[in-house]
Image 1: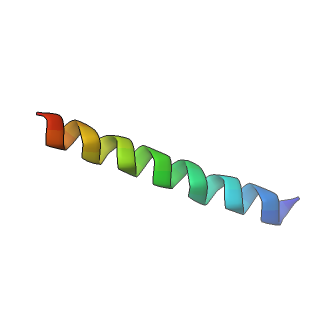
Image 2: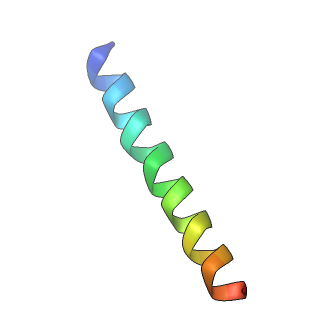
Length: 27
């Protein structure tokens, strides 16, 4: 369970970071 949460956490962080990069590039 903890391993699954850590994987989901890192995945969500990657998604958030990629969205921030796209926003920065589109500005």
